[in-house]
Amino acid sequence: MAKLLILAASTGKNLKLAMDILSAAELHGHEVDVMDLCALDLPMYTPESEKQHLGNEEIQSSMKRILHCDGMIVCAPEYNGSTPPVLTNFIAWVSVQSSNFRLLFNKRNVGLASVSGGGGHHVIMSMRMQFSYVGSNVLGRSIVVNKSKSLNPEAVEEMIAGVLK
Image 1 (tube, rainbow, N blue to C red):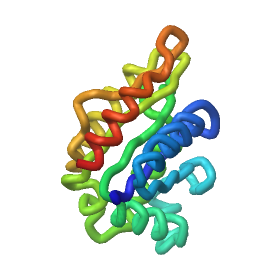
Image 2: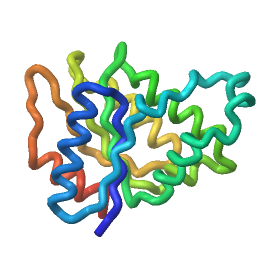
Image 3: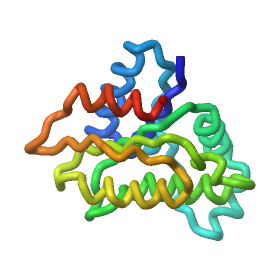
Image 4: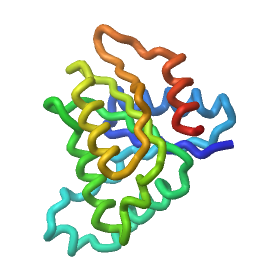
């Protein structure tokens, strides 16, 4: 079947959400890869660090994982009303390490999900703008889990189907 890549931009509840999505997708026979962005332990991107880490193997491997997937789901918590630093840093690194980084995202279906104590809607808006900007087809519906809203298994099924269509 299809290859789904899930980016987890947290080691906590959003990584658990990524694993819940993985389980649901595997039940349908899809090949699933979860990329824990925190485990990559990338240095903070700066123009100076770019020169020092040119050809970084973890970044190169990450780009190959993106290129070989049929669709992506990004699970990220809300940090101060926006995206977590690890996600922004990851996108910065792949944008400078690739000869044409838009190929990583252009026309790729992307679903957005968040578990957040702050509500989660601001991070969804931020990610929607960023992934749209780099050319992704961002699904209209997202998954938001917070204090007042639990994970809806039907929403997970719909997101998987939407990303992999």
